[in-house]
Image (cartoon, rainbow, N blue to C red; front, side, top):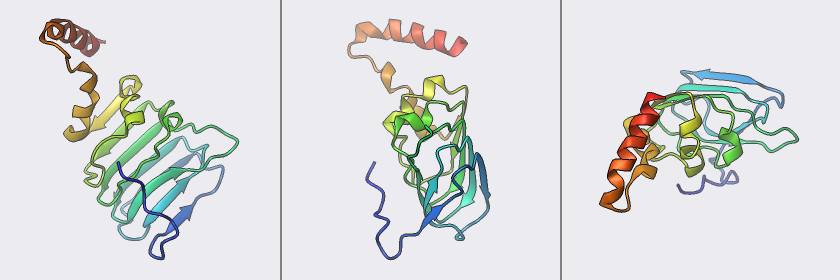
Length: 155
C-alpha cells in the first residue's frame, strides 16, 4: 500500500479529535470531512459510513496504547489509508469494511489479526487475503490444509 499523502500539501486537510474520545460515529458526511482523520489512542469504537472525503486514518501516539475494539467502515469512496501499526488492531473484536473501493487490500498487520477477530463483515476482495496462509507449497500439503481449514470453520 503506498504511503498516505503528506499533510503539508496545500490541499490536504487534517482533523484532530478530543484526546479522550472513546467512541466516534460519522454518518453520511459526504464532502464535509476530508483529508486525514487523526484518531486519539483511547478510541474504542469507530464507525464511518457514507463519507466521500476522508483519505486517511491515523492514530496519535500518546501515553496510552491504542484500544480499538470496533471498526466499521462502509461506503467510504475515497478512504485509502488505514493505520499501519499492528498494535492498533490487537484488541479488535468487530471489523466491517464494505464498499470502500480506494482500499485495494488489507494491510499485512490487519490480515494477521483476522483469525482472532470474532465478528467480520468484509467485501470479497478483502476476505480472499485472509486465507493466503493456506496456500500449499506442494500438492502433498493440500489434504492437511483442507483438514485444518474445515476445523477452523467449525470453531
